Length: 121
Image (cartoon, rainbow, N blue to C red; front, side, top):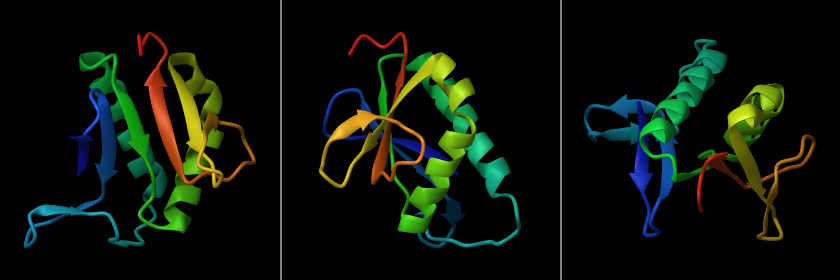
């Protein structure tokens, strides 16, 4: 399940995804299925970002992993697809120094910020 959660700041959304927990009626972002589909999942999540920003072109989307390993996985996914992503989006990384900087490969980040290039923020 993928959900764009409105934050306290206007036009800023948290990107949440994971397995849907029927009992809790919420996203379980700590679930581990180990079924080898992580690339497919990340591609699906990326497609939802494109769809969401078509309807909300001024949205700023924040994403972070529920664990350090997942944040690292997201960084690798961004790195591997940076050329394609950069055609439509600007990506920032949140550093350990608590600063947003433009995403660079090979750097570690705590979170990511995605902005559609036509955004008028």
